[in-house]
Amino acid sequence: MRVAEEEGVRVPETHALHSVDDLKKWVERMGLPTVLKANGTSGGDGVRVVRTMKEAELAFQALQAPPLIARALKRAVIDHNWSLVQPSLLRRRSVVNAQKFVDGCEGTSVVVCWEGAVLASLHFEVIQKRDAAGHATVVRFMENEEMSDAASRIARRLRLSGIHGLDFMLEADTRKPYMIEINPRVTQLCHLTLGLGHDVPAALLEALSGKTVAPSPKLTDHDTIALFPQEWIRDPQSSFLRSAYQDVPWQEPGLMEACVRSSRKQRGWHRPGKSMDAKQRSS
Image 1 (cartoon, helix red, strand yellow):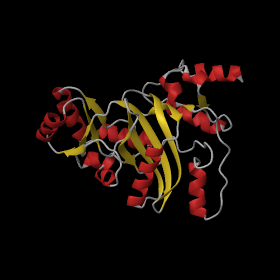
Image 2 (image 1 turned 60 degrees about the horizontal axis):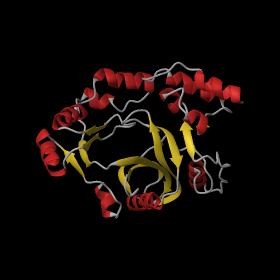
Image 3 (image 1 turned 180 degrees about the vertical axis):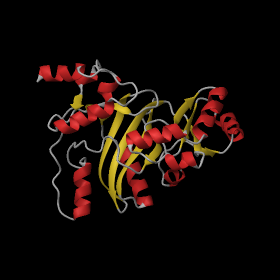
């Protein structure tokens, strides 16, 4: 956030907290509600919006605590994600940041960069989420010059290469984007091919191979996209499964089955079949 601010990117004030006293001083200065975020987390698992001092203290203690060994082992065995094992065994506390609350809706971008230049990008408004702090399940594709400019400034300053995700809050009254975090990894939106300048895989392949790669055909003319299996899991009766473009890999039945099998392990799993049957009937 400090680097972004230095580059002229609009960001909410952010401050690292080391103790409950730091938290109290932050709340006295910035007020409530406020946002607490643990570094190194994803999918909203390390984010809390707190509205009272008691909520803030409990959230800070929970976010700062080392990961439970049982949780780390579950993540490693089931999800093949070993990132929590070392912090859990070493009882390493997480870095927790406080961030000024921005009232509005979420925006998210995915960019592919090479040596500091943005090659392709996708910008979305988050329409529906798994839960209040969870990952997006329905998004709306949009063009946003400020989000594009923020991505370009960050990529240039940090000499980024590869795929990165940037998250924003779109202020309720002004729709101005405030960048709230950046994640140096692939996101769940990277595969969406939405025309010239918006094909992340093709741009990355071209950078790596040094050969000209034509973008894939535009996936859909719908600007609203229901992600699979995320929105199906959240609500099999969701109206977005009828009104939005469904990002289901119908042409790859093996991948589709793997998504369904993986989804059975997720919390909030709904009995399968309803939305799938509806799609099959309409076909």
